[in-house]
Length: 256
Length: 378
Ligand code: SF4
Ligand code: SF4
Image 1 (spheres, rainbow over the protein chains, first blue to last red):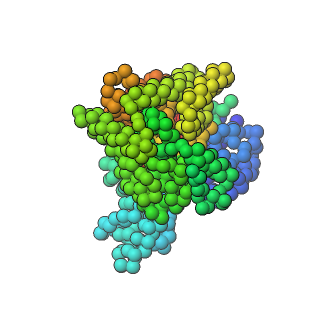
Image 2: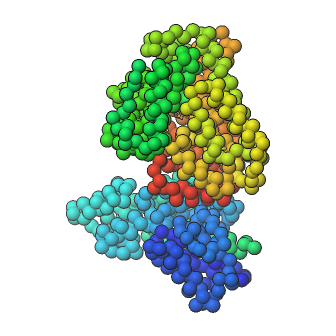
Image 3: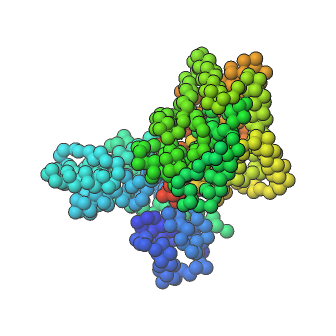
């Protein structure tokens, strides 16, 4: 038997397959695209090509597209799945997970290996991966280069607009004023990590162990900026973006 | 006297037309109608004067865009919706109200009432907010006296202490009936479906005949006792925060869908005002009213002693396994207070989540995910 976890996020869909020994047998990231159902069926096809038929696995789906996976046995929210996956990934029991996703940013407080408290950003894209993506586009670079540019900024500026649309025009006017790309890039990253800091504050627990998951978790400058803001070293893992899918696959192991 | 319908009446949908015709009939029969917004309005006064009273809180986003032509956008949806209904003449109760009571609660409402005063006859009632002060009670008692005087003048009626006392006895009876219904949720599993419970409590306020309202509560209680079919696995949730009539399906519907059950609504329309009985034995009936109404644990009070006393007790009493604090976007009093409530819940070791939302549907999916996740953690 295999245990399939699918984390269908707004931008990308993460897939993890565990074997009987709870080891990662297969993993993949695909763009979610417009049609969640097509994406889900594509994954099923891929698994078949890898010799895994529908009857060979139990499946838990999570993420905003979780209900669009027609062959899932169960849906569990991304909060629980991220918590579970992060415990496994980081081998920790009492810590805080920050997940910067495409559409939302979550802060999850874990106590004794279970979700104790969590916070998700409000209904706008400030402080999310989407925000970073739009700003990178405006600057004509990709996300990774934006974060590296930010590191070499000489004059730290701040972007004050909370709303992505307004922030974009703020960036445009900074470009117009001749502000360097590095400084603007710094302002962009700074605005995201500040937002995350605010969200952390909404969780009353006092955890010094902080881990980052999600699509941005491998970008060094994001980790540095977060560590500075939170006053503690924020670490990640190369599998960080799979935390949700991993948690889902672990939950799938419990399905009878 | 024949009363006029709004100019746009013919364009209204059937349900709305019916509402207007019902209210027109009430008015044509010569009845007087007072509108109010808040649980601080002492309805006994109007009962005593033979005047109908009706809640005017806006619960739908239908009129918010209209309201935003005059009011700032970043106000709570309840304020905007209420004002929008007055502006567009889409609410029969607002439209036919002879007088509207504006209670000085949050700043947004207070200033909205000033605007509303241009459209309707609005009477401001000044609610003291420093309830720990010795003068709070006499101030409230005086305000109630002034409201009685205003009501007498406006409608040409005479309201004696004795009338007020009788009205208070009846309202207490109504409160007791509603409590009996709410307290059915003590049982494990709790027998009353969450959405149904709130809808009932909200709609009963529109029953003008208190006696028949009490009767219908008793009937529902009897019916629920008979049915008794419930699911023992449901998570028991206490809902608190802003009035939630406008987000009922989004929030409470999602609790139900995710295998939760609201065992106690601590909000207005729920238990918050219902345990504030008026002591009808008190020789000074105004003092008794002031006493009762100042017990309402609303976030506009500072310090908000009663809410923080009540919630831990209610959690125990209703065996709640989680506290969901619903705040409407733009409601500063409740949003700021949510932090203290979170701390309180940590103290008494009950899971807590704050949910900020408004009357729109743009966050339905996110709200559902949050509620599902919260219930998963319990
Ligand atoms: S929450 Fe406070 S201001 Fe709002 S209706 Fe209730 S008592 Fe009035
Ligand atoms: S919900 Fe908050 S902001 Fe809105 S009317 Fe009530 S107290 Fe005022």
